[in-house]
Length: 173
Image (tube, rainbow, N blue to C red; front, side):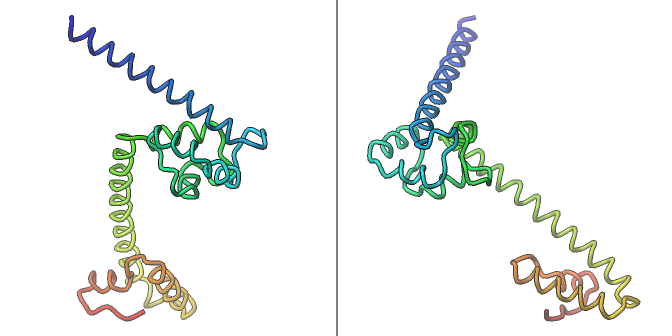
């Protein structure tokens, strides 16, 4: 019973700490919203982070203010403005252990996406091997162009995948 009470107390303390952290973040957000429109723009954010006291405050919250644009990009949903929800939710995720867990999750997701991409290219290669003989010249040219674009963008080389599936040497794109 003592251990259960101790665990319950620890959970309540952690929840109280998290709530206090969110309140501090919201106060920070409101101070950064110099236009008082309910959102913070990149310009407002960068200007606010020039203050040494603000930098120190963010450091106390375990947030790195040294790269304001990167921090803004991590918090923004893409519309160029940070809402209070984006700021508080994002800052909580960026804090301490959550950051490590997020990195591991992202690495895991990237690995899964790369496997799916490789499987897609293998299937595409098999389909292409079946249809390319009968395909009109314009379709073959379009396929070659797409392969060049994908290679230039850093994706795995579809021609190499096709060749590996057939067991012959890859053609150069």
